[in-house]
Image 1 (cartoon, rainbow, N blue to C red):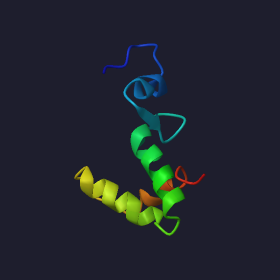
Image 2: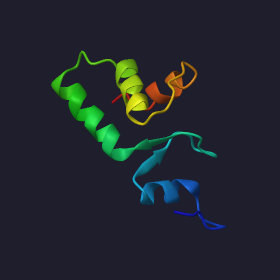
Image 3: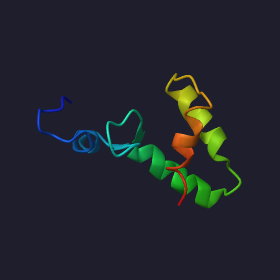
Image 4: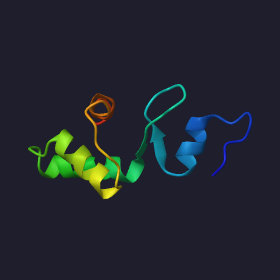
Length: 79
């Protein structure tokens, strides 16, 4: 999906099922389905750690996990 000239990036991301990780010029986006899955997973098994979940999610998407992305992700995963 392409962003039109006056269209907000957050709206474009929401149309494809993603939530922007930052309010201005997002570099990270989070899948709504993946966040919902994590929400239900933590309610069923509270001992599941966020870092392990993020690492597994990165491996699934074939994205290299780095500690520099970890604080950005964990700030958005607490309920």
